[in-house]
Length: 426
Image 1 (spheres, rainbow, N blue to C red):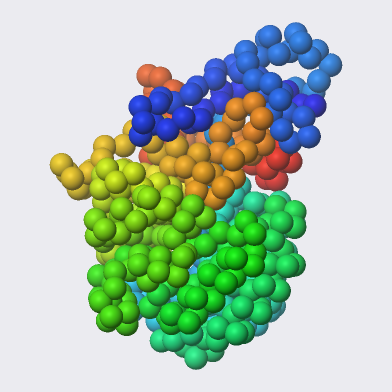
Image 2 (image 1 turned 180 degrees about the vertical axis):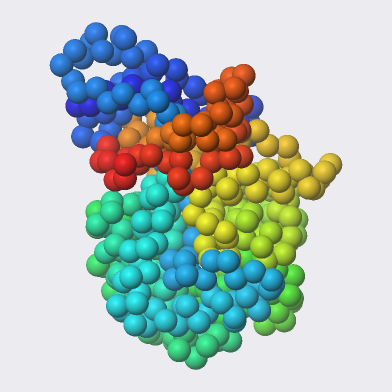
């Protein structure tokens, strides 16, 4: 067993329901085979376990590992393609990179960059949009397994309106997806997600196949995009006879507790009600929404309807892997909405980046640092004399220090990452 000593900050309860930040100063966490088996004042735990190895983390702050609920593996080299709205950005930047995934050597290189980038940013679990090619998805799962990340991903499916080399058929989609799931779903920390790109590029026949896959792969998640851009929404309505975007999935039985839909910047009330009653989650991707000019996320309306929300980085339209940056941009977005926005505290931001994401991905044993949880954690320790170090030193309390971490923190401040008690990065 290992006894970790430090300041631990987490959100085991939902701040949107009135819960506060949990702060453990000079706290001990006793970890046995990756699980937290005791938590309390360090002096008491040390007295009870005098022979165990101590890891002293008091020169930084320990947070749970981040949980990214929407990120694209093939698009890491497309980050920074600014100046275009969604559909034009896809054609100019994202889809050419998606097509390059046909080259397995290229895809393997990208996969290795991708998982290292997530881990370096303190992200320990992620719902990942895979690739349109099976060999590339194999490369992603293989790279994640070597690093140890908890990755849920799958073959991306489209059968219309994209570049021809990215298209499949319902029959092929079913066979290739099921073969990938048989190889990777439940292998190590990997899980499978049925992943149509979006209704714009999927016929009803392909969406029906997605439902068949959900039935064939017990415990699989379902993920796609919804209501990101007004031009996209109008095109989907035209293709589906005036149907709203959420219903394009729901009428195939694809909206339920296992569903995570990214963006939802422009939902109708009817759609919000469907998402709430089904238990689905929306992955809020604030830097992507800002970079593409998609709009300001209506968090207040989601909360009023009871829709579950977590954070996603949406690399490569998003501007990096760090959920610290996404949290700060989420705060900005709600400030810009004025009276229509939902004021956010540091506790809300940490919850959205950790516990809310773990609940969305059905990972009940990660997201916070309680007894019975896996020790998925990150140590933030800014360089001495840096603006963040100075800001933390002069914070009035821990919540203010955490707000400054979200404001000034970057992956360079993440000095160590653990998954299941295994040190990945130091």
